Length: 491
Ligand SMILES: Cc1cc2nc3c(=O)[nH]c(=O)nc-3n(C[C@H](O)[C@H](O)[C@H](O)COP(=O)(O)O)c2cc1C
Image (cartoon, rainbow, N blue to C red):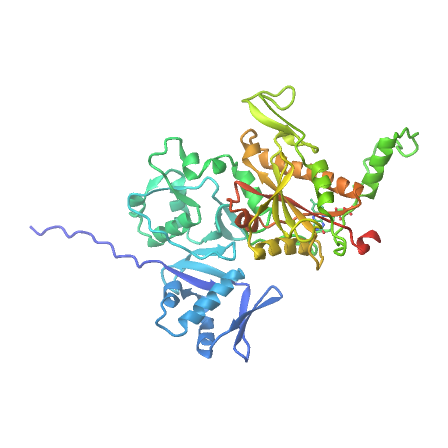
């Protein structure tokens, strides 16, 4: 009797990771060898390259396998590698995972931060993987995208089979079981996703469920929507258009400055008798005079004495106590509370002040933490380039060429609020920022100083400066302050 032939499956070629130009980017080689990238009406010069390297640039449109130019054997590889890294820094590159150059795309990786480079950490057969609770898939145009506020890249999933493979990971799966899947792109993808914290290795000894096994206590405290809101409504961790770009100016009319009046009985408030006391009159005067000041008089900068008075009046801790509630009617485990000049949801006071000082009479240029309990400034060592970048981005946000004399970055210790509040933690923090910002404005006005709130902050830059994960303590507001310049007075 003939033995039954064992059915053998054809080996699947390993998936290849390639770098390729974003669809919106065109590269032009100038006669002097300079390569210029053109995109959305902008252009960036990427440096000079040899004719041989420039010749290979066209290959970047289809995709250059990373392993091809990783080896120094070919003379142009180092140059191509330099060009590709520069393109990546400007967000002009994407990475493609597929089985062959001409085959269908499996996954396209879109970097979200300038220094993203795909990494495939080694996964052991004994590893068990699970999908992060911060990861989500959604439709973007006609693409299916996989994202996470923790990830430094976005993954366009082009093969529905990979999407269902990922769906399996809502429950932890041993890698040896996942390896039984025939698609090697899946295994390569898992490593890329572990690197981006979209998948994580489940710690076998962790008995507390998946949530604690994904990260530390600071991460446990975050609600999904809050971390996504924080990472997407600030700068530094995504590549979406940001700020006043008027995306709908050509298709939707702007809302009027004043809401159309309701039809109803009208009560005129303008002709009532006033019974103002001195304090009402002076408060109303300060409110009337408050305005944003964006340019400063650097010949007579703000003094350390003024800064001390400003911080003392707006942010210094007035008292501290321990209780099971912050205000009547509340109850819970005992916590330490403080009282400060501005209001805070549940008396949590999660906000901390970090000062980037450019010019202050009596205080060296540098980066400082304001200890609101002790009313002292503590200097923090940061790179000069990072301090400069923070100050310059504030100047840019204000449309000014000169940096502010002092930039106050309002950072939140997120866990202080989310330990107690579900669903509303991040929104409470932003409301606190609004209350503190107005307190800053009013005190600056009363002291004859100039100040301006700033709406966009790079949370990744700040995380590098203070050496803390972006989800532990991070910026949620900024305020520029200094001696008002002459142009401000005339406004
Ligand atoms: C949350 C918030 C964010 C702001 N962001 C900026 C900013 O990034 N750049 C800027 O020049 N002004 C900024 N401002 C100031 C506003 O532009 C200013 O308050 C508004 O134009 C009204 O002018 P006034 O403050 O002088 O009354 C911000 C104000 C607030 C409250």
